[in-house]
Image (tube, rainbow, N blue to C red; front, side, top):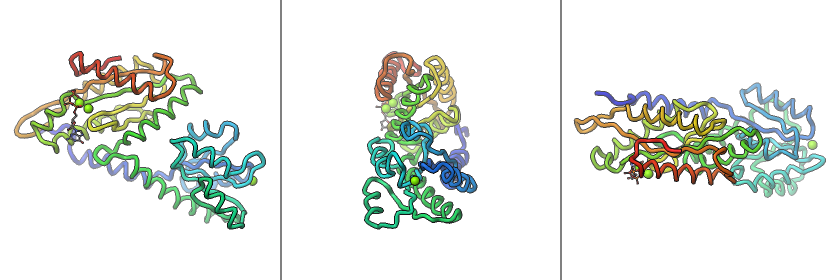
Length: 314
Ligand code: GH3
Ligand code: MG
Ligand code: MG
Ligand code: MG
């Protein structure tokens, strides 16, 4: 009996992920023209394990949010250059920021003005003055709710990896970072070979186990800053910051070797699987966006299929 990964191990991984959504208090991006107050709020939130970043420059706010990837924005309502509502409206124009909860913090007692702010994309309103414990509690509750919702929307049940839309968003965010840092971004598309045969021969449940095992392997092999997503049924996308084509290809080849070395048991038989992958890096071409990189990785993956499968092509 040699399942590639024993079932308890897979269960442990899922529970780790679930714990993560409960114990990881999340990240809050603070927008306030009053630097002292912002720093005070940051300290209060840090006390309960929330990671914070204070907006230093409204001009570069989108870039800063994209790079920090907050789970919630705490926004001052009144600032000298832009109103909180204006900034909220700006954020909502970005697809990947559409669902980001924005909580306004203001001494605004006028209900009509509060409601107008909400119509500009704020999700909630906290009225000043608020004491530290109240603020911490209010943010904690909203963060937990938003993280749970995000998990529910983004995570795939079988693999615990993020789904199609979320991994595409991650790729787009990392692509923006390339333009700022100049560091290469690696993108890998991989698809399990002859998977229909696996389902037909060993059944759908065994097919599911193969998919979950590859997902576990991907999670184990990539770095903390890398992302893996379930792009389709038995198709996965890797987003690898600061990774050139050569490094991405090497990593993917190591994962392929590990995957094809896993033996599955079903119907009194032992079998293994392979995958085909396409690798690109932002340095390869004049890519205008991550979608173009994904298309190029997909094309290389199909070439890998056509030239015999069980390989990684650039
Ligand atoms: P190729 O080498 O060309 O990729 O051959 P293939 O048989 O893998 O072809 P294709 O990628 O088109 O087929 C994917 C199959 O994966 C089709 C579908 O029935 C199966 N599949 C998709 N999602 C799941 C899933 O969640 N569980 C299981 N068991 N099978 C799935
Ligand atoms: Mg102010
Ligand atoms: Mg396939
Ligand atoms: Mg496929």
